[in-house]
Structures are given as C-alpha cells and as structure tokens.
Length: 424
Ligand code: CAO
Image 1 (tube, helix red, strand yellow):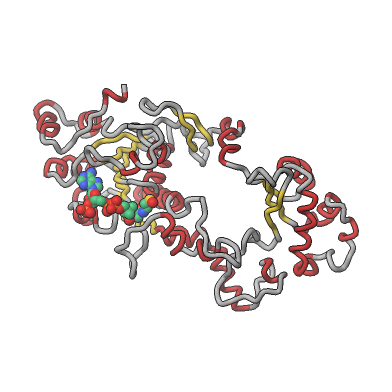
Image 2: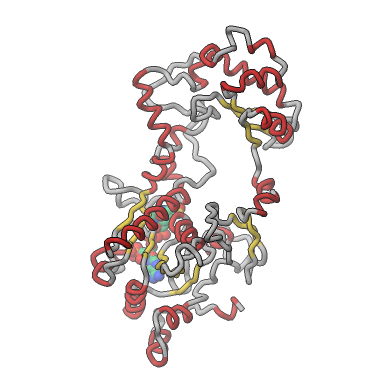
C-alpha cells in the first residue's frame, strides 16, 4: 500500500510548477488524472524536443506516474465530463494564469457546490496584491522573490540560479499544503483552497537573506567577505558571490585540472572547530597559534588571502582527493559535480534518485526519481502518459460511462486523442 493510495487528483497542471507537485503526489501513491486539451496537451510536450514527434524530456521528466485524459473544457460536453471528475476526485491542482479557471466556469464557488470535500490547490505567480493578475515564469519568480538580488558577485548584475526554485520549489510547497489540507479534512470533512504563490515560495527559500537585511540595521555583515575586503555595505543585502550563508566562511576553490575542466572546483568551508586541521593540511601550522589567524574574528580581514593559500593546496589535488582528505578530518567541503557526473553516479542509481525509464516513442531516458524516501511507501517511477492515453479508461473506470452514454461523450468531439495504439 502507498501512503496516498485512494486519493484521486484532478491534475489540471501544465509547464513545470504544478506538474512537479502532482508528480510527487503520484509517487506517494495518489491516482493522478492529468486533464489536457485535445490535440494540444501540456505545451511542454512539444517544447525543447530532442527526438522528433516524441514527448520532450521537459514533459516526460515532470509527469511520471500520471494518467492522461483529453477534454475540451470549454465544450458543453467537456464541462459535463469535468463536473463528473470534480465530484469524483479529492484534490484539484491547477496552475493556470489568474482567472482562467473562473472563465472556464470552475471557480472556487462552483467547485464547492459540486464537491464540498474538494481541496483546490493553485500555484500563482503572486499572492493577492498589485501583481496578482500577472503571468509568471521561473525567472520572474526568482527575481521578484529576492533570489536574483542576492545571487551573483558583488561587482556583477543580479543573477538567476540553475535550480528551479520558482517552479519546482513552489510545487514542493504546494504539495505540502495539499497533504496538510487532506489531513485537516480527515477531521472537518471539508475541503479548502490551498495557494502557493511563486514569489512567496522563493522568498521562503531566501529566508536567510531577509534575516541579513534586518541584521544590516545593526552593523555590517561581518561574515560576508565584502566586510573583510573593507567594502562598505549599502541599504540592501548585497550579492555575496560564493560566501556561505551561515557564519562559517566558505568559497569555491580551483582543483587539479581547472584549466580545462570547468567543474574542477571544490566548495571549502573554514569551519572554526577544525581550523587546526586545515592549517596542517595546507602546511601552515604556524597559523594555529599566530594571533592574526588563530580566531575567527582575527581571520575576518584575511579571508581572501586565506582562501588563496588553501587554493594553492587544492590546485594540487583533484576535487575528489580534496574530499577524501578533508572528510576524515571533519572539514566540510563538496566537489562541484557536473550533470554528467551526477547522471553517471552509481550511488544515486542505487537509491532511485536517478532512474532510467523506458518510453514507447522516445526510448530510454534518465530522470530524477522521488527525492523523498518513505520506508513504507517506496516510489516506483513509471513513464509519463501519452496525450490522451487513458481517456477511455478514465471515462469508463473512474466515471462509470458506458454504452450509449460513452458513445455520446466520445462522439461529441469534447474528448479526444485516444492514443492507445501508440502506447501499445
Ligand atoms: N480545454 C480547453 N481550454 C483549456 C484547457 C482544456 N483542457 N486547458 C487549458 N485551457 C485554456 C485555459 O482555460 C486558458 O484559456 P483562457 O485564457 O481563454 O481563459 C488557456 O487555455 C491558457 O491558459 P494559461 O493562460 O494558463 O496558459 P498560458 O500558456 O497563456 O500561460 C503561464 C502559461 C504558466 C504563464 C500561466 O499559466 C501562469 O501564469 N500560471 C501561474 C503561474 C505558474 O504556474 N507559472 C509557472 C509555470 S512553469 O514556468
């Protein structure tokens, strides 16, 4: 038995943020019924295509373990089918542009009328306020949630990060909101609205930067390397390059092979508790006793010089050798791993974090499996559905249509892309 077995999700999501949420719920055992527009489907099916006529990796990697039904929800018969689905399901998840669901005739009031137990969960770019009507994509959220202004180097422009904190991050927040609402429903019997705004999600992940904003009122941020370099702070939290977010100075240092390998680097933290061990491995034992280096406050104005000295040592070792030497000494460090290295890492394959999946039209591909492991509810990754692959199955098995009624629905043109042949 899976943790969310028996929970039916009406998955109205598209692109990235919503699909990452429902994919997680599907991995935890929910029956995830993805509703897509006939003939079109989720726009990502065709985006960044690498194999002609096959669903893109963008789509397949975000929609595992789901079933696909195609319904034109603006068609009168399509609305009839959708109403049946609303009555049948526990959770509706959507990330349409603001107002799209109301225009479709399925706003919160109507959903409650149809199914008072329904949990209606939405990703939007912004919460209520001046920007609530805006369409939002990943980088817009990174910029408006405080990530971009605090990422990059002091002398460079604001920078977006490669991790999809706006989309996948908000999907995670929404998934937590949904299971919490399901838990509350156990006691109240009522559904509720769950909103995860991308700006809020990003700001939540940038919590330590709002911490620093307030600390700035009480003096310079001494752990920022900018302080050690004697550069004054302005009014807002600055970009801190590769400084660590905590109190322990850290930086990215070159390792052996850096001249040709763009990822021959290691993140190195000069944790106060292991300062002596660091001095030993870099052959500066005198720094252990030297008043100018012995304590963290004494080192603050020499951080750049200290990291330059440590780098002279790391440059003589590969990033993995640095890790092997430092780990037994409890010196925190981490090699900069490329996507190629991660894709090939056997331990990630062993744990199911990186999984190979077979797909009928695109063949084998790698994906990231469920990043949260439940001992009593292991996630098995199954391929994403083809467009409309389960339309007939859902109409009959979930909604109970049959005989002439089924013929009427299928004949109306409101459902389509019964893509069974391709799947077989
Ligand atoms: N049948 C008929 N119509 C359908 C349908 C179906 N099965 N599914 C969707 N549609 C319609 C919607 O009703 C909407 O129509 P109207 O504009 O006439 O109301 C239309 O398709 C397009 O929906 P959309 O506005 O959500 O899509 P978009 O491509 O224009 O915008 C996005 C995409 C992501 C910017 C927008 O959905 C959004 O801001 N979502 C919220 C924030 C979010 O999740 N952003 C992250 C996306 S991942 O980077």
